[in-house]
Image (cartoon, rainbow, N blue to C red; front, side, top):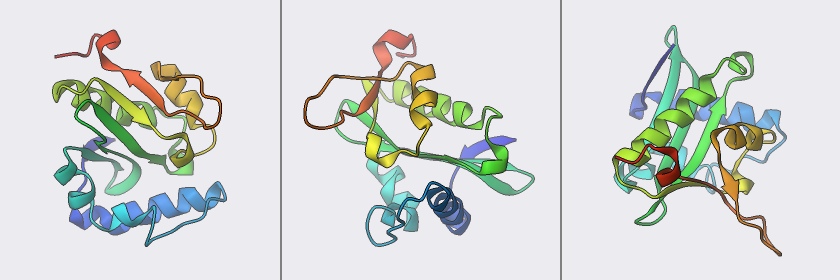
Length: 154
């Protein structure tokens, strides 16, 4: 398995993977709304000081991770998805590790995840990395990973 940067040619396979995972978890797909970032990963991620990764096995995209700048100090992990038959093999871990290294190399202070954008069960993967959240009364707070604590700081 190889992890590499995604490109324009990957966009149809990326979209298929994300939509399949969303439907699996009974999440609504909105190609003109929340999923519009998949139409152009260059503009949605790379042009926004971010990264979009694909995990590939034998020419097939089996996992993805996308993160982009939310602010000067924060990189937002927008997407992590792994095809059902490839789960529990460390692919999500490798993708998230690569995103965290990227964030540290670029000098971000933390990586943040909006809970509403994640799939059921992904909080367990994030907690294993050390992501946490601040308590909130009215809204579910974003999960974040503070890079200074991790030793990943460049």
